[in-house]
Length: 397
Figure 1 (cartoon, rainbow, N blue to C red):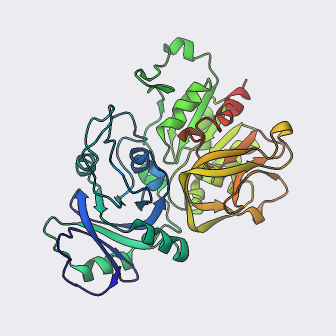
Figure 2 (cartoon, rainbow, N blue to C red):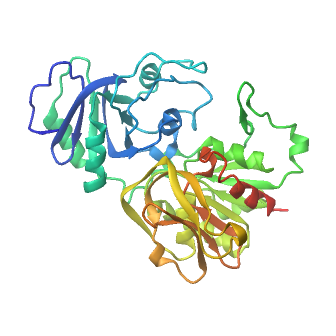
């Protein structure tokens, strides 16, 4: 890491990360050429880089992978969570090597290039991760030029001019724009792909879940189907009246990027109306945070966030019978959290992080409404958290 303006690129350096404080990190570029500005975060998962890159919750972010060997298994058409990647780019330790996996369809570096995403390899990701842990997630520009020619002053100005994620509503940018019945299958099985939905007539007997898409991962919809629901997906800004016109048995509040307080400007009033109408609600990640906001709690920007596939979360609060205190291994991706100290009397805390004690689950007293901060659809544990989908759909009658 260096602090200098327009130094010559080290030999072989074709990628650069310029932090807003002037720090320059060199590497070898791969994927798409050009530059992108966003917040640098880190993810500790050892697998699932394709799911991470396509997760809409990573909009506006550049992902540092702490696992050194990213790209080894290539990419395929099944392991995606959206139509296109939403993370701006990624930073990795080792060069992307030729893929070695029977499911591979395209090398990771080619996939990145085709999807307009920038990568840098050859970076000391441990040092960068320590920096983020100690100083928080910085704003930065990531850039790739095969000739190694960079105007660092210009890149630095771009990094410093970016407003950051706090106060930013990104859900509008990543949501789907049309209401549609989810018809892209259920649970995945090796060799079979995603389970096809039965014919539409049979699906009409299932409880109808309206899922508000603030930047949802596809596997959430598949898990709702697996748990027995018929799912209609609606855009982030759908009104209470339009939701109710679909006659939902329950409403799901999805994950998504950005600041929950900013998205909550239009989302929270709708959620409050759904609560008043006693519609069963289930929120994940951003949806969990906005459910908490709707019930009177507050959210806060975290110092470094939680992003990884091995986060221990404990069941708390006394409502678990024999499983009180049980620990779930969870997948997480969030830079904001519900402020546990702000919970009003009508919110009951149900889960907490064993890493830092932060809030990871709530239920609203007197309502069929609950949420979790983590991602139960991401196969952590690998099935530790599927019960949440069963609890939601099973309670719809």
